[in-house]
Image 1: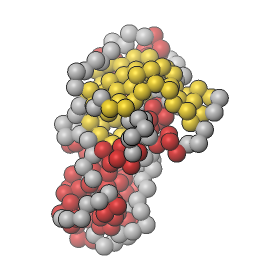
Image 2: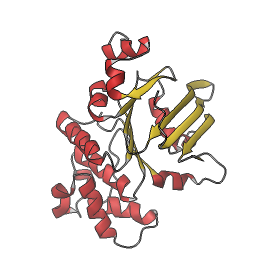
Image 3: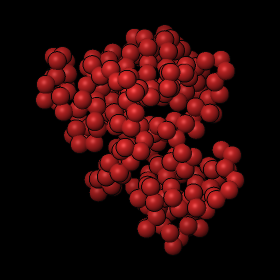
Length: 253
């Protein structure tokens, strides 16, 4: 089990229920700074629910109930004095399907900057963000064009640029390439590789090869339980739990 001294995110005895349905139970883990951590496991095992706990998106589900703690640099993210909007500025999110605003490419990023209180150097920040998302060379000549006219892969990189623009410390990605073709998927994976070392990245993926390619550490979840969490190479080559081995070898079905 990974126990870093420089954990950015930590859960302690975390449980989530939707009404009477248990989704995750008693999960304790620590996520190191500036690492790429992958959550893998069968569909419905709680991966996305766990991810959404880190920026309080489960708050938007009326029947969701959380027990335990979620810490960001040692501070309880669910404390009474914590503003969820502040949490989401520090911990950005990229969703499974691209969700650009129905605005221009430029305004997709500038609008997010403005509503988050940025006023100066917005044009420079837009360029920096698009460069960080490896999109600038493709769109610099058409920043006023409708973002919805971009390809799916470009839209997803635009959403990543939008998340990066407000300078988060953590970037959460919920199956960011599952709706993309192999070429666009490869670009997203290359982008994650280029961001490694500058951000802490937590990614949910159902693609085990993808997890093996891009992540430093991997957590395997099964039926709402954290089964195993270790460095990715060790987890895939020397799993300690039979359920992990069955899943990564395909015997689980």
